[in-house]
Length: 335
Length: 168
Picture 1 (tube, rainbow over the protein chains, first blue to last red):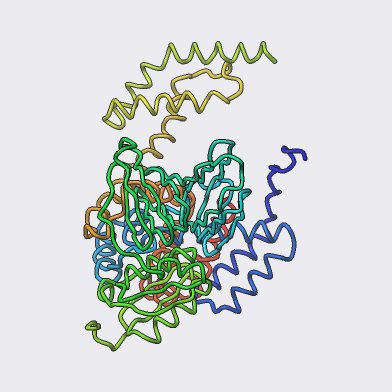
Picture 2 (picture 1 turned 90 degrees about the horizontal axis):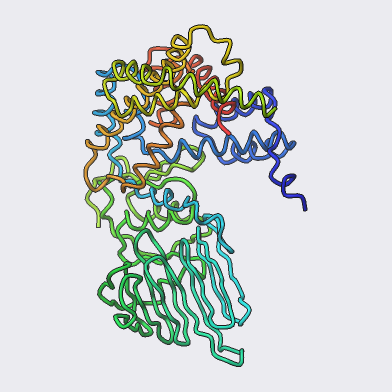
């Protein structure tokens, strides 16, 4: 394979095709239905040049869609200062939305792109490793796998994994560990779930036991976690141990299980499985959500939410920008 | 090849040693800040590194200020954007404020979009932002800007085309 050929940039699409794409974007920005989006998607498949234009349009919308309006509008709008003030005031009144979906900013961590295995947003993947161990990657996750004669190491670079270690078949036992920037977790024959989120690692042990050694502590300061326990830890400290239930791995069967989960937390969870932003109006942020929601079809999950609670789902930018707001006409008091 | 490169290198060195101090002073007066002026002076010389025929420039200082002026305008725009951004950040309730690294990423995206929209006429730019950032509908924008819906759509298409050409 010729590397230079592989990275060769595609020809810039011709202006006529870009004009067509601009016409599509103009139409789609004014409340598009699914059929419109599908039609645009088909348009993008007509030729390689169409595909380039489509990809550009897509990435442009992504970029615009990721900007929080309350910050972007005052910064970008160059009209007069007085007007700018008025815009801020109006924004503060009408768009005081919690940025739950800003988690997507973290998901675009450049580190992920060089990882051995990764999943895109909304994707899951099961790896079967050389020793027979299984690693299931949840949405927007990335791992490196380093197996040597002396040890088995999984480096979790982003997202969440479920690990099921196999009995070591090699003649000499090789320790199995998962590493995150916050420290290492040594498996003691086991099934466990690790989530790496910002400066924190969350560990849930389902079977067996796992020893935690935070990165900035001496090995002796480690702690053993047993089945049914969960804990969060940072590079220099381990949080209080809590009780875990099977709900935390509901994602492996395609579900998000909530038990009186605050709506804003729920939105943050759901946002992990779709690209774009999910915002929550503070007026409804404290609603307690319960139920099992499909993460493979987040549109349906949102529809279920709207069917059960006094929450309206507002969709913009082809579903890339979701706002959860109090149902119009309904009070904000909810339980 | 090597000879022309060496010759150019020599010209740049001469230009630099003869005029760098003066340019820095000129920039200081323009923007009132020695620190950024030093950066901009450096950027100015970086910018002309690739220029051909440096030897044929008769008025080196006029040439340098022409290049530097463009960079100063750019610098002012970036400053204005950053100031507005910081103001907007300060007006957000604390629990809605993004983390430091998110702030930086948002700022970078804002700079990128600002540069992308730079060449658009102000009205087109505002229409585009009202739609894409604030999520207003076209007829709402038409009412707010006191223009027709058809004009809004024309502006939107113009802005999208511009972005698609510019954005890769």
